[in-house]
Length: 140
Image (cartoon, rainbow, N blue to C red; front, side):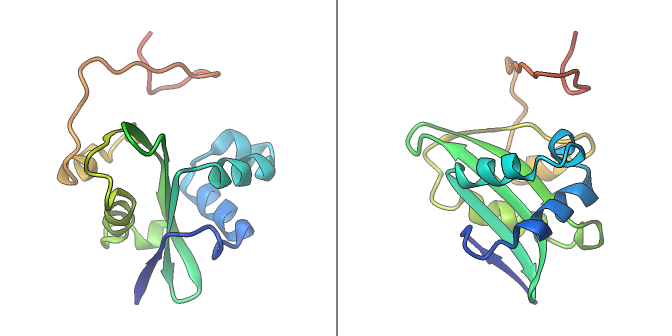
């Protein structure tokens, strides 16, 4: 049975790093073995939600926020063998719970746009971003 936790206390950091490596996210930190930076980023987050199959970490996501006006969702990841089974929806539902009055931004990975649309997100007409590296997510 899948369960969800809203806490950093339950995280085995090595399992979290494996999760993101398997889904290909946080790539520059994973490839450079900068696990301390990933851990620090999660510890500084406003909210972190994890998904579990028994004792196995199978998914995670996090939110950065001022807690009043704005928030941004990052690093939504589910192990490939658990994708398309409602785990991502469960993660996001708990992450967004009690945050209905904030404006919430996110950037979808390619191919997952419909997932976020089903959760009520809409495409932003004037969003901009600045990356410290080349990214296929931004226009020239």
